[in-house]
Image (cartoon, rainbow, N blue to C red; front, side, top):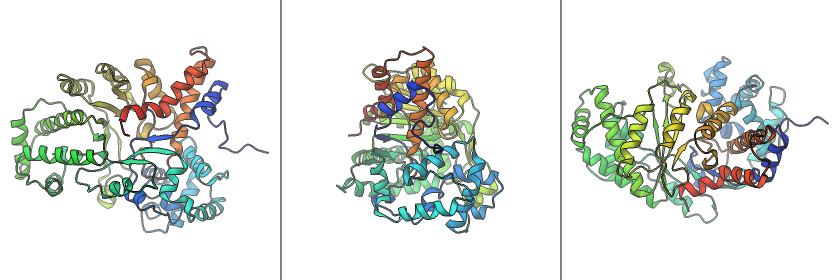
Length: 468
C-alpha cells in the first residue's frame, strides 16, 4: 500500500530528527502568542457552515495564489458561492507544489478531518462533503478545535479602542480552558501620516473617555487603555511598522506636530518620524512598567495595488517586502529605551531575510541579567513562515545568538485551521537539529537536545510571556 503523503515521518529525513520529533516535540502543547483569530468566534463557540468559511475566508495567502493563476476575483473574494470558491481552490492546489500552501493544505486536511486524499479537482466533491459533515458536529466548533490541539494560550491582536467584551466573556466561561488574552496594537495612534488618523483619535477619545485636544491627552488615553487591557489579562503588545523610526524628538515638538495634523495641516516626513519616535518610545517605557513583552513586526510595504485596495480594502493580499535602512535606527531606538533600563522584553520580526543578521546582532546588544533571551529574533514571519525561511531564521539565530533561548512558533493567522503550522515548524526544527547530529555537529544526546526542542516548542514561551 502506498504511504500517504502526510505520514508519521513527514519532513523528518534522518534518524535523529525522528527521535527528537516523536519522543520530544510531538506531544507538546501549543502556545500561540500571536494570531489574528476572532475572540468573538471563540466566545460564541462559533460553528462553521462549511469548509470554505473556515478555510478560505480571510486567507490572503490562498487569494494570492489564486490570482497568480488568473482566477476571477468573483471566485476569490467576490459574490460567488462558497462551494464555487472551494472548487477553484481545489483546482489550484496541485499547482501550488513548492509553495508552503501545498504542505499546509494536506496537513490541515489530515489533522482536522483525517483526509489522506490529495486535494484536486477530482477529489474536491468527496473532500467537501466529508469535511462539511464533520464541521456540522459539536466537535468542530471554535472552542472544540482549540481544545483538540491542546492550545494553552492564544494571544489575539486588538486595537486600544476595542471593548474586549469577548475576552471578558471567554475569561468568565469556565468551560474554556485555554487562556485567550488580548494583545495591544496601537498602530493607528502612532501612524500620524496615514489617512484617517484624526478620525481614529476621535474614536480613541470616546473609548478612553477623555477629551483629546493635546498630545498629552493622546498619551494619557493610550496609557488608560493599556491599563484596562492589563486588567483583562493583556501582557503583550504588537506593532506593525514599515520601518523603525528614530528621529530624536522632544515632547514639545511632538505636541506641535500633533496639533498641526489635528488642524488639517500637512506635516513633513521628518515631522512624521519625530512624532512616531516619541510615541513609540513612550509606549516602550509604558510596556516596561507593566512588565509586558513588546513585538515589533518590521518591514511590510502595504496596499501596493491602489485599484484593488480601493475595491477590497487592506489585508487582502497586496502587501510585500520592504527594503530599508535598519541597523542604525533599530539600535538607536533600543538603546534609547535601555538607557534608563526601560526596555521591555522585545521580539523583533523582519519581513526581509536580508536583515536577519542586522536583527540577530542587534538583539545581542541589549540582553539583560535575570532574563533568558530578553531580546528575541522572532520566528520566520509572513513570507518567511515556510521551510527555507524558518531554517534560515533559526540557523542565523543559532549562528549569532542562542537557538536554545528561542520562544518558537506562532500562527499569525486568522484561520482556526492553522494549528498544524506548529507541527510543521517542529518537524523542520527537529530535522534541522537532527541533521546537525548526523553530521557530527551536535552530540547524540537526546535528553539534552530533546529538552531544547521542548523548550523551543512551548516552555520558553510560557516562561517569557508571564501569562498565568
